[in-house]
Image (cartoon, rainbow, N blue to C red; front, side, top):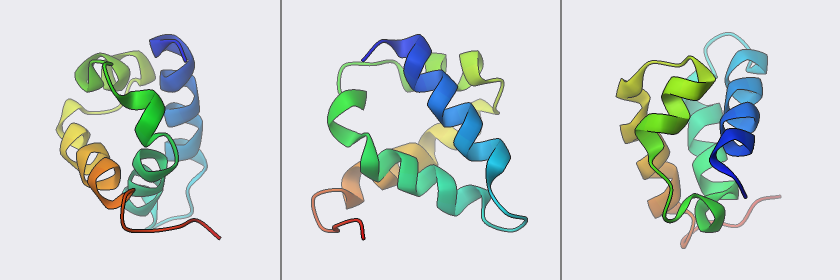
Length: 72
């Protein structure tokens, strides 16, 4: 998947998250798209999504959790 498409999905998920669930939405994005995110610059995805670069850490957490969790 292209970086721009991942940024679109990330932006949508972040802004559609219910109040108080933005970080959870970021973790879920990392979990769901862990394989597609490999090899992409996560800082660039944040910039393209117009989301603070500090959330790169939260995406990484989701990616790491991906091997241990299964989405419902």
